[in-house]
Length: 113
Length: 215
Picture 1 (cartoon, rainbow over the protein chains, first blue to last red):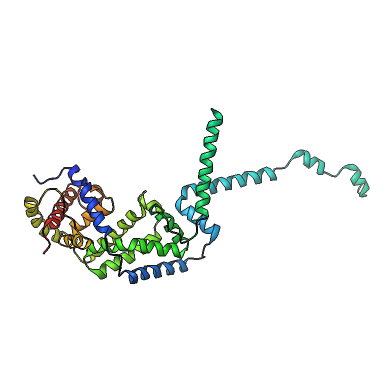
Picture 2 (cartoon, rainbow over the protein chains, first blue to last red):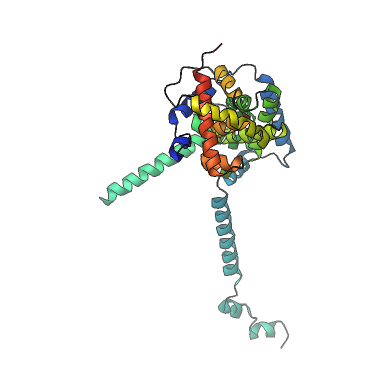
């Protein structure tokens, strides 16, 4: 019977391990030219980016790349907090408005009455 | 009791902080552990040349070995690896679905090799039909398991080279990219049972090639 069962076809950890070991023995010499070309492409790509990012900005960008959902959530929360704060500050206070009204004496002093 | 819990929590926070500070203060270019490949990738994508150099140096030997197993031509294999690096710089970690960077890169290399094999018309159905006959013969004669003798990277590459392209692809995906039968079926546009058969035959054929005495 030549038809493999699913288990036979997918499970053969010994063979997989041997293949990985075989690949890990791949020679590491004579690859300088290929590595140089790959790095030249990387440089070209990096130089082509709009702005070189360094320091804290690079860290932020890397973090954003790694956890986009987390960073987007944090940004949204910050924006929401800023809006709420702005609304709180800009809301008119009736007592303050009352105090800011010129009183009668001020009008008399100003010669308007 | 509460104070003990609080002390434990404080200790955990401190060790977390220590790890974070350690990462933040790490000197660029200092060797890192295997698990830090993704950190190297992040640094390389952020423009850090030493990290890019280190990552290219680390990934190239296995990538070219894998591409040679799939394509069997040095020039094509080098082009496929170069294309794979370009894809790696432009990819997102979420594409890797939790895989290590090395496994993720193997997946990219195998995909590029698949494109090359399609261009060379080695993945066509006609070829598969022709090789199907020899596969059927292999099934009756091939050893079904047992210990494999020791083999070098060159012997493995030669043994892979004697398999049909589709079998090489299936084996490469299974062995180096953690692909299961469903993944292989999707990638090679086969139904699930055909992918089972293909992988099974590929394993038998490779075992047979590796167990044959080297001339």
